Length: 165
Image 1 (tube, rainbow, N blue to C red):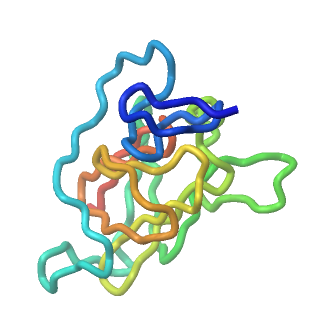
Image 2: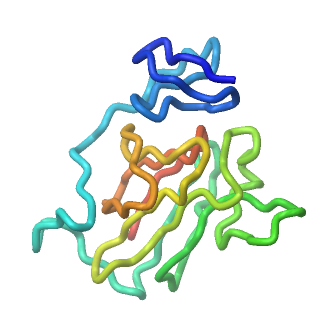
Image 3: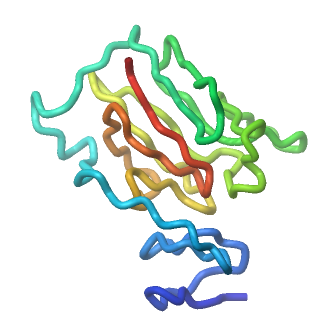
């Protein structure tokens, strides 16, 4: 069954949490304001030399989940898949968001991937059902987007902040 987004008119399947065209929440009665973009996003192919923070494989990645006191810390990472554990699933994510209400917040089993490309950190939506938003803007699946210190990343409705130091 398909429905129409009340904000932009795009069609979507029942059960989808965010409009794929405009990023609007599709949950009835949702009154929480959307995050506005803090800066223009760049894909990895649009990086201008010297314009982004450089990281190394030794730089930890801190993932702060909204409502949680302690961050998830990745000490040595190159590629890390984010999602939720499903006992019936054959593939397991490297970073399990299940303890943070991932299922209820629309996080897919294999939702996204943090990736180090050269000396920049990036995030890739792994064709998740409810998408990834970077600083309030939905990103395109399969395409790496540069991460900056302090970026807000939504996995469905689960909100995180990313830091490198």
